[in-house]
Each structure stands twice: as structure tokens, then as C-alpha cells.
Image (cartoon, rainbow, N blue to C red; front, top):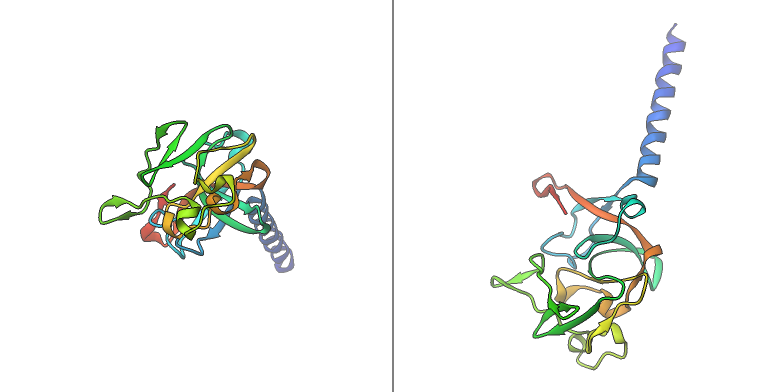
Length: 188
């Protein structure tokens, strides 16, 4: 009798672990935020859940916070906000982002002294004109099936201004909630 009960408990434990691993592999995956590039929305050390199915059944939207493979080293994972969709023209004027000629409302951008931190072109960040068209020294049109990504902490973000757009195939999923620390529990 005891042996049968132990086998039952063992099978339940194995099934629970298998279900948890399958859920993480295909549906929801946790990630830890390693940098300040998404401050103030996400802080270093925050933990977020990422919906891996979001774009299998839905479309990427401007403003979504995505986890994706970095185009320069697909072994690295980044988290940034979608600013430009395929076919959009992204431009900068006076430190503000314009998409298709319209000022982008960006309440999520890090604030300094109550004002949105300016968004600078790659050339303005480095002190030399950017050699790449996506550096935003000039307006840039996002290619088909690509996305232009920016961090919310524009002065301290390695993003599309530096390495270009990301491909749809590099998207892992949509960040949906901060789950740790509990005091920062919040939907994204």
C-alpha cells in the first residue's frame, strides 16, 4: 500500500514538473531585467513574465515591450519597446520621436526634472555622425517585417539607433507583467 502511494506521488511530481517546463518553454517565460535601459518602466533586477504565444495569435503593436534575440548575437536576449512598425518612418526633432510625421506620445520615457528625457540620434550620442541609416541622424523608414526598438531610458540604452531593426523571427514574446519584486507588481 505504501509503495503504491509513493509511486502515485512520484508520478504526480513528474507530471507537475513536465507541465511547468512545457508552460515555460511554450507559453510563459520569466526574465530578469539586467540593466537600466528600460527605466523607469523596468528597473534592474525586476522580473517579468513574457507571453511567448502573443504574436502567434496577435500582431506586434507600437508601444509593446518585447523580449527578443539581439541581431548582433542571437545568443543574447534584449528587452525594449516597439517604436517603429514595418513601413513606418521614424524621425527625431528637438529630442522628440516622430512616427510618420506625427509626434509620438511617450508617457513611458524616463523623466528628468519632470520632463521627458530627450531622444538623441546615434551621432549625437557618440559625437560623430552615424554611419548607419537607422542612427536617426536623418528620418529612417523601417523595412518590411522589421521593428525599430528603443529603451525607455534613452540616454542609457543600446537599441535600434545602434544596431538597427529586429526581425519578426527574433521576437521571443511580449512582456506582460512585472511579477517581482511584489511591490512593483504591474502590467506592461
